[in-house]
Amino acid sequence: MRPIHALSLITIGLLCAPAAAGVTPIRPKQVIASGLVYPTWIGHAPGDESRLFVLEKAGRVRIITLGATPALLATNFLNIDPLVTGGASVSDEQGLLGMAFDPDYSTNGQFYVYYTGSGTNNLARYTVSSDPNVANATGVVMMTWSDPYVNHNGGDIHFKPGTRDLYMGTGDGGSANDPGNVAQNLTSRLGKMHRITPTVGGSSPYYTIPATNPFVGGSTTADDTVWSYGLRNPWRWCFDRANGDMYIADVGQNAVEEVNFEPSGATGGRNYGWRCTEGSSCTGLSGCTCNGTGLTAPIRTYSHNSAGGYSITGGRVYRGCAMPDMQGIYFYVDYGSNNSWSLRMVNGAVTEFVTRNSELQTSLGGQTVNQVVAFGEDALGELYMADHGGQIYKIVPESGEVTCVPPNPSDLDNDGAVSGPDLTILLGCWGVACGDIDGSGTTDGADLAAMLSAWTG
Image (cartoon, rainbow, N blue to C red; front, side, top):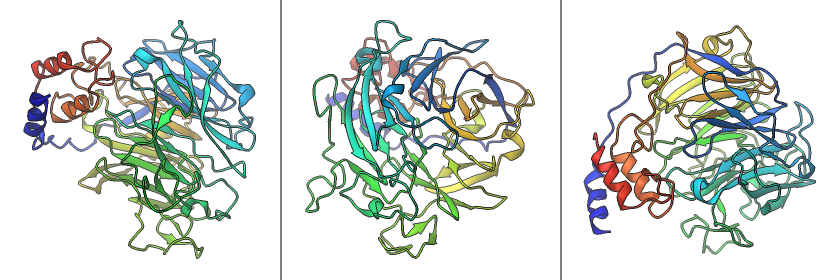
């Protein structure tokens, strides 16, 4: 391992050249017009460039095959409708809400779903069958906890790039004004971001708790899985696949919607302020000191008015190859008003803030794009949006869709270069499959040699 350590030191000082400003005119292109019922999530399995997976709120996971003519497969990948409570209407906030594939999915076949049960929220583990388009019907519940109301369920789950750490965003349990002040209560699982490390196979508890979680070993009775707290309803949040930065869109109550940002190197334990703050506004409720020094303020907010909206849908950071100038730009939208925006984070500050209404509200085919409930990305980093009415759109150049050259396998962050950030990902995946370049099933010296031979700096 000594040569690896030396290479890590060499790359500490490497910097990526800043991307050009995002100026490419864009439009949504309809990918799926019908056949989906209340989609809530879009994503892909690691390394799978041929398929997208879509959640339906009632409890089904569907597959879209990509290519010249994308198609929705008739057979469900997974159907857990009997276990899922809610999801039968547009206004219902319950249902099948989140999904994440294990970084080593190609070898262990494990994936994870978040859903509401009868008075509970649940994180469960499932596995794929011998048919890659069908999952095994029986899974195991890894975590379950009581939820007193039907709204504010959170539900988005993601692995941090280059790690086996699974993060899970939970809502404050519902009603109004967080009546139990649970978002500020570290013993409650509600209103939090959690971090665990799922095990491969095995029996309960199905995960371990990273020793570096901020409240592990403390004198309080905090839930050791808590990574950050003070969230109201982080309905859709994401990691930047290139660097591990976290963007949390937290749905507001009566006045303000917000975007929070956590750089990849943060140590955890951040308090995002709910219920004493809504955005940067004071609610007058107890729980913390409004805008106090112990709180982390949002990077962007917008009000409940015609220029804003009333329910933020957090997006994704673009890392595709069709629009190189868009590299590193974060997109998000308001579910109710259809207003949309983008921004780029540079050294912890917002730059290139742009209103995208004229581009994202009407598709290339003339369809109205509204009720956007989720953003997703494919294996190449291209972005998609799910309309709650059942349509899926891909964000493409207004001049027409561009067919990308498949990325260099050593370009793990898909930024067009094989450089320091890729090496960081590879080292973080050492011994497991998430940085596997040569297809051997694990990340090892052969992958390091392949990366060095493809190095562009």
